[in-house]
Length: 257
Figure (tube, rainbow, N blue to C red):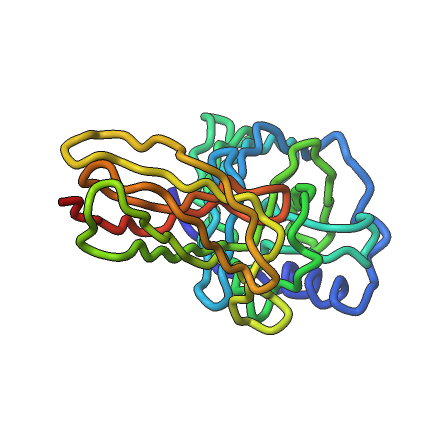
């Protein structure tokens, strides 16, 4: 396995894409290069916050009957014609293992996503995949693939259960807030209208049980009351949707006396 530095040809490809241009052969599928077995992030959604870079693992197989100086897989939105938005110019690799003739390579690489540089809220959607192979003469072939990847906004939950301690049979008020990454402002903002589950785990038990479901308010606020019965832990859980990842709060222990 080996890692190669970014070649001049790839730098030129990215520059062309940035201004909405492409070389004559850029998007024409050719029989001498093909990509298959693409797996992005182990098949799981890519969940990104407001500032931390996310390195997304990608594996793929490339078959080629011509010599290549470089190849890689990328994610894109839009139409693959030079005007698309792409993710994949950064990251590590590819690291590849080739067959004896060098015409089939099984590769792994990463796609590095920096939210402040790469994403806006509209990017929380399904992305398509493609592969590019670059030849020694600088020409390249970029092919579409049927594999897709879901990119989602990171969500957070807080919790507070009170009073602590509490007398058995009295009411416990459980509050919290659900927020999610805003890639336009690079901050976390309240997520309204979400159905969030309140869960309880009795002291000494290993699993949680859903007690009730609550809809978040205009700023993502959560509030409900329950009857104190046993010592245990309270938490909020959100199961996510097509644009936002799932989230769990920390657990808040309440001593019932």
